[in-house]
Length: 234
Image 1 (cartoon, rainbow, N blue to C red):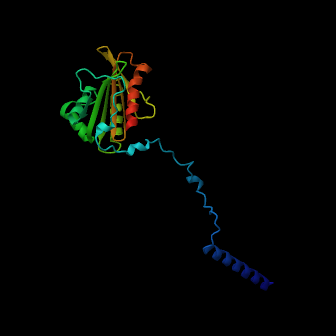
Image 2: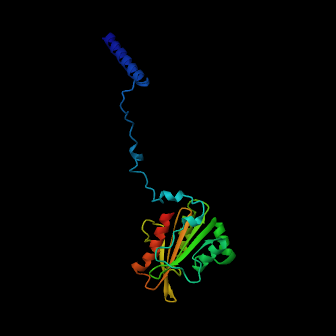
């Protein structure tokens, strides 16, 4: 009996050695994919925390070259503003003056310093009166790093919200960071609309002056349409 038990133990040990040694040696390929171990249930994607929505891939784009080439042209049927340049390049000084005129920045040297502090490089502005009589101004501000325009526009939109421009409206299709405003105050029979947003390093500011009520969908569509056309060009 003792001999039989010993023989069985020896046989089991030999079988175990064979199995372990067989698994530790490289096996010939069968040409079929090998099933990998599944992830621990605690670390599966379904249970992982969800990241917030991020900006589209254009947030890393850098626009180089003549800024004028990134500016949309006036639409068909448009005419020039009387006594005002139709288009011009914006320097630190004139870019700061444009912002101050909109109530969105400090005038003079302080405004220039503020732009330099956020790495502003240059800008461009174009103006026209469309075939329906709306006064349109479009400004683009370029910064020297990817995302600089988005950060600038987001900051300005936040600072403008609730001020002289009224409440921000996040109603620009295809750009959740852009904002539109309708200025409550009417001047010379005209009411202003502002749309501000960006594409990576370039901020876009569109303003229109039209006969009220500018709060109607038809009237605010002008500024939103111009903004969307310009952003697509970038």
